Each structure stands twice: as C-alpha cells, then as structure tokens.
Image 1 (spheres, helix red, strand yellow):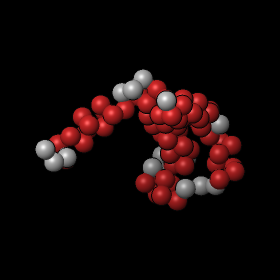
Image 2 (cartoon, helix red, strand yellow):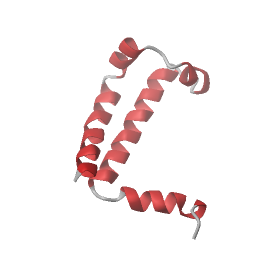
Image 3 (cartoon, one colour):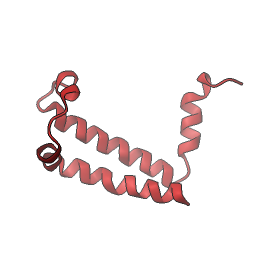
Image 4 (cartoon, one colour):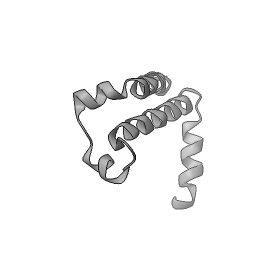
Length: 81
C-alpha cells in the first residue's frame, strides 16, 4: 500500500516539476552538472523537465505494481542466478 501511495506522490509531483520549471530554477538555482553536460539552451531547465518525466514514469509503474517487473527485467542480467 505504501508503494502505491509513494507512486501517486511521484506521479503528482512530476507534472508540477515540468510545468513550474522556472520557479524551481529561481528558488533552487542552477545545476552546474546539467549546465555543463546538457548544454542545450538552459541545461538546468532541461534537467528539471527530464527529472519530472522520470518521476511520472516511475510513479505510474509503482501505482500499477509494474515497478518490480521492470527493475528485474532491466537488472536481471546483472543479478546472480
């Protein structure tokens, strides 16, 4: 039950992070790693938008109990048998 609630929280915060990116940049400042490596126009803004999309994806997979299957699928070859 906790996982579904946490997934819903992530799913709710993700779009807010995407839509209010400028507010986050003004209040939390720029990210030097993002400015250096994501050198599109506004690397920090792009970083916050990507983070929001990842949060939406992880939140949805947690809400619908798909997170464990995706993790085992992605990391299965690295785990010992």
